[in-house]
Image (cartoon, rainbow over the protein chains, first blue to last red):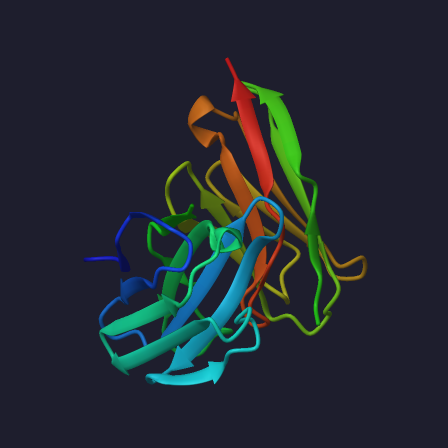
Length: 115
Length: 107
């Protein structure tokens, strides 16, 4: 079975540019999560969706960050404009049957470097 | 919100047992999970324990849950170099992950 697929795996771009990260969840999963991992702050939940609807975006750092889920098989996380402090590994995860009953399945992440 | 705390680093020799500890603050947690993250990869589920259990064993892995002290531990028996990774405890219901413990296994 295909797992959670993220693209790109690596992204290096200059400050001020728009960055778009992509995620394809596991088929049949109705929850999708975006996380950010840094050495300083560990793993942070940015936003999660249920049935394509954003449920909690309180972890989104600021207005420069936005996330969409236009259908059950695709989500994007966009940063515009990007800043060096956005450099991190961004993970997408998906699960089913409610957040308390099933583990989350993680993608391999996108390593983002903003110069 | 809930806090989930772990020690940051553990170093053991191959063949020894490793014990990774985790404390949490929310007593209403239903499931507590252990994930493993290898370099360059995402988190992968290792095991989990339901809150009405005190212990769960799965091959080399033993999870102990002390609800009174809100303490969770993961014991890896006969630790191998391939076990070197970062280990996260997580309260899946509250969507809170610990800081992660980096386990280094030396030959």
